[in-house]
Length: 147
Image 1 (cartoon, one colour):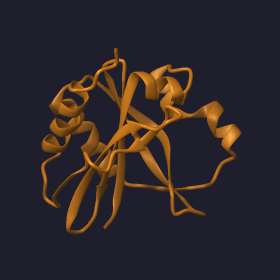
Image 2: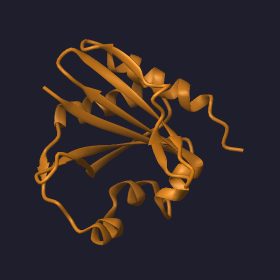
Image 3: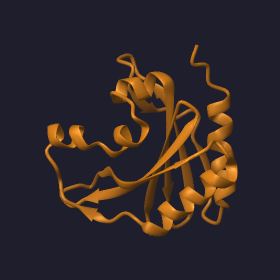
């Protein structure tokens, strides 16, 4: 079974939203609830476990401009925009497949937006512990320079 999760780290706080599977997809959209955590391995692992157990509920497509007004990550983090999040934070994606788990790390593109850094992705066996995933995310974040 496939499952998708994400973590946004902004101003030394991690945010783990639920990823809704858009019925017209296949793509995912951050939906509520968003679980904020400290940058603590155990806390982040618990938030990821909760996201995994919640699953990826099917959600209706929404108008992009309407979604921007209600964006759960911006609401939870109190960031003004995704550009601000990208400038002062990091984004991580986790994909669980039957035989493996992949953790995607972000980098910034030429316009200052989050994109996957394929050189930094990590792959694990499907039975990887959530604390291992959390530690890889927190280690990557600790090595970033936001100066």
